[in-house]
Image (cartoon, rainbow, N blue to C red; front, side):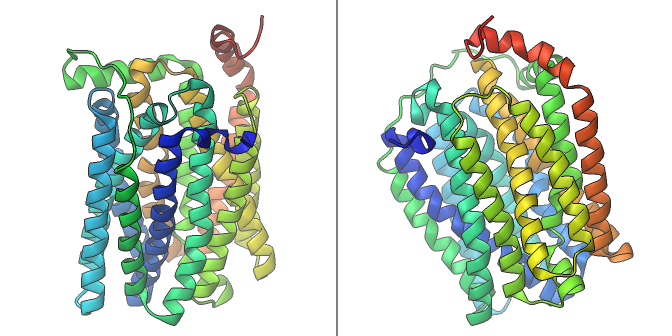
Length: 415
């Protein structure tokens, strides 16, 4: 088995991934169609921010509790339940769109429902990976391969969405997303995992959350990594929310232009996941994270100035690469150094720091874009991202001094 894809030698992980490939392509088709439909109906960048806020606010509110639940309950059943609910959400969106009765409040409400499902799914998914591979040595590769799959969906989905909207309608995109869940549910029918041993008794929920928070804050590498991830989510990631407005403002483009630009970011992300999947150790990833934040911030600044589509496509690739390397590298480090009995809670904080902060970034970006323009908003976000990278670089010696003993204890580095 190729080292880049070595986690696929585990049958359960391969089955899980086969269903997720379909679901992730469908998810991105639906997301692009939703943003395009909202902007087509309203012409409001603020409402694009509201859409992003509605999608990700549940992650901020529910992910910490989902992480606690994943440390306590059957992960396989929790994953299956979230996938079934997401299929129902896509079906409802499809029915409303084809009937012509769909309104903005329908879109916002159903987007929040999907956000609630994702808020539970993501921390559970991170904790579920160890059960799927059953081998801690292949866990990091499973994280990278899962990210590769997600970003292949991010690459193909927007391009397909742009073509489908042009040929048919947004409703067709919603239908295709709903149909992809058939493959997802079928894959779960064949997965057979051995659940991890759980403690028979647990502390009260709030005490369990506090225990996880204290652990994450007192572990210096976790604290710094989650803080940088949150800043990137607040200032850099919202570029995706503004893409319909940027396409209109900078290029007077259409849905196909939007699809190709977002697809270019997906291509950059795929390259980033291939790079990370080829690594056998997390050693040196903190430097990668700092460099990626610096590069992504500079590319956002350049994107705000660009009026050439070819240049913007290249910059979108760099942005997608940088943000992917940050998010997945942080994931890989956390999965490596976290204690098993706190894995679900720490990974829920990871989900909250990234996807949970995105709604505020998207809402703020949408409001700023209506006043100073989408491109100027992207410029400001890029500058803050660069400053955050420089701050992290200044504290690299401190982070290394705390992470090195953990790596030595795990056998990642020798004395």
